[in-house]
Length: 108
Image (cartoon, rainbow, N blue to C red; front, top):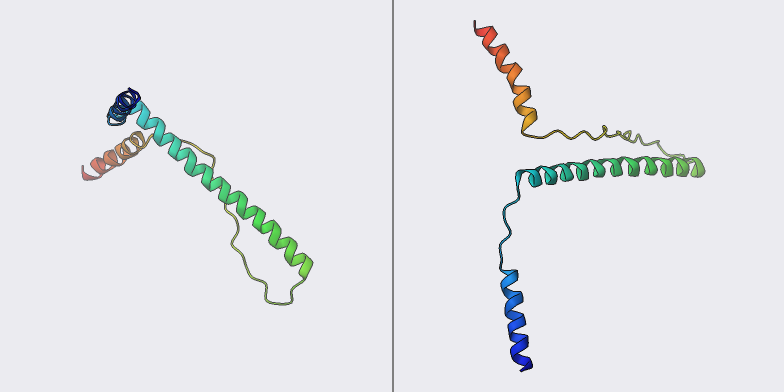
C-alpha cells in the first residue's frame, strides 16, 4: 500500500515539473531589463570602489617602503555616472526622429 502511495505522489510531482510557464509579459520583461541594468551599474560602482581602495593600499605601501625603483604610473580610477535607466526601445526612436528631419531639410 505504501508503494502505491509513493508512486502516486511521484507521478503528481513529475507532472508538475513538466508544466510549462507562460511567456513573461512586457512589464515583466521591462522589469527584468531594468534589474539587469541596475546590476551592471552596481558592478561598475563596485569596480570603482575596489580601484579606489587599491590605490589607497598602493599609496600606503609606496610611502612605507620608499622604493628606489622607477615610479609606475597607474591609470586613474574613473567614477561611474549615476544610474539612470531609460527603456531601450524608446530612446532610439526619439533620438532618430530629429536626425531624419535634418536629412529631409538638407535634400530640399
